[in-house]
Length: 211
Image 1 (cartoon, one colour):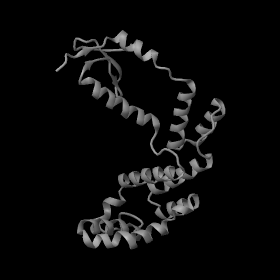
Image 2 (image 1 turned 30 degrees about the vertical axis):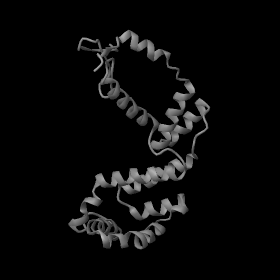
Image 3 (image 1 turned 135 degrees about the horizontal axis):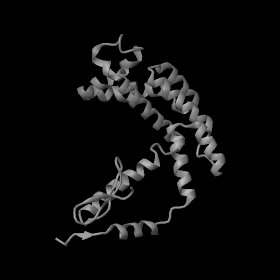
Image 4 (image 1 turned 30 degrees about the horizontal axis):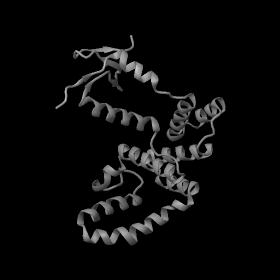
C-alpha cells in the first residue's frame, strides 16, 4: 500500500486559487437556487441586477409555491387543480387511470404492493388525518405533506426541463464524495459544511482557516 500524502494548508489554498470560477458561474448558481426554492421576488430582482435570463417563467415559480403551500396544509383538491392548470399534460385524472389500468393488476401479483397502493389511493377519500382510519394516518401527517410537496415540486420542475435539485446541493454532495475518496490516500484541509472551513495541519491537529 503506497504511503499517505500530506498536503499542507498553503499548498492546498494555492491549488484552490488556480481554479477559475467566473462571476457568471456564481450568478447562475444563485439564480438556480432562487428558482428551485421558489423565491420569485428575489429571483426577479437578481435577474435584473445581474443581467441573467431566468431558466423559467417567473409566474411558474409563484404557481409552484401555491401548489406546495396547498399540499403542506393538506388541501389536496386545491393542489390538484393548480397542478392541472400549470401543466395540463400531467393531469391527475390520467394518473388515477394509470393506477387502475397498470398498477392494480400488479398488486394482485404482490400483496405488499397492493397494500401500499390501497393506502395511497385511500388518501383521496379523506380531507384530514382526524377522519382517516389509523392505517393511513401517517400518510396525512405534516412530515408526509412536506415530503409530498417537495416531490411534486421536483416533478413540476422536471416537466419544464428544469433541474429538480439545487445545483449548490449537488456540488456539496460532490465535494463530500471527493473528500471521502481523497481521504483514503492523503491528509489535507477539509471543509466542514456544518461548522465552517477547517485545515488539517498534517500532524493530526485541525485548525480554523478563518479566525
